[in-house]
Image (cartoon, rainbow over all chains, first blue to last red; front, side):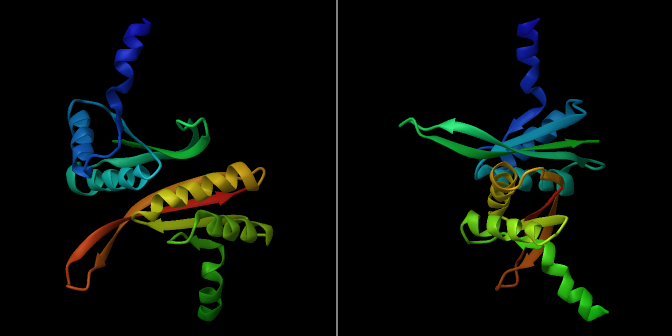
Amino acid sequence: MAEQAQEKLPENVVFVGMKPPMAYVLGVVTQLSNGQKQVFLKARGRSISKAVDVAEIVRRKFVQDIRVSSIDIGTEERSLENGQKINVSTISIAIGK
Amino acid sequence: MAEQAQEKLPENVVFVGMKPPMAYVLGVVTQLSNGQKQVFLKARGRSISKAVDVAEIVRRKFVQDIRVSSIDIGTEERSLENGQKINVSTISIAIGK
């Protein structure tokens, strides 16, 4: 049961990081083509701007009748190697039909 | 009438650009203290991540009972000096009580 949940969880989530935007656009488009009704674009820190770019490129150029259904922002506490704790902003953009 | 509208329009909008985040945090906090029920944080391109940081800092550290009431993303077409047109992502974060 737990194993199943772990395997299923990341399927409709695309984490936006250091790759070029089109890599993540492709990820979202692939998942929508595979029948996912909703895909979550998630990013932290500087990558937040790129996540917005990806959502806009998918919506405007790649998938018809798709829309951004919700956007959530938040804060994560991360520990640096020297033990210092810093806050990093996060975003989650839900894209669906 | 039109003049009044022009003067009133930017009052509850904070444009996030190249300054440090705390400059914009101060702008939002000042407007809320001055009685604005809602403040819009707007940013383009790379500054989008900073706008999210500002919203989170205001919400977590500065103003009680405040929440992000809506977030919109979009795309603006801008012309470069050589005439080339590029698309730039935008964000608008509404913060209010």
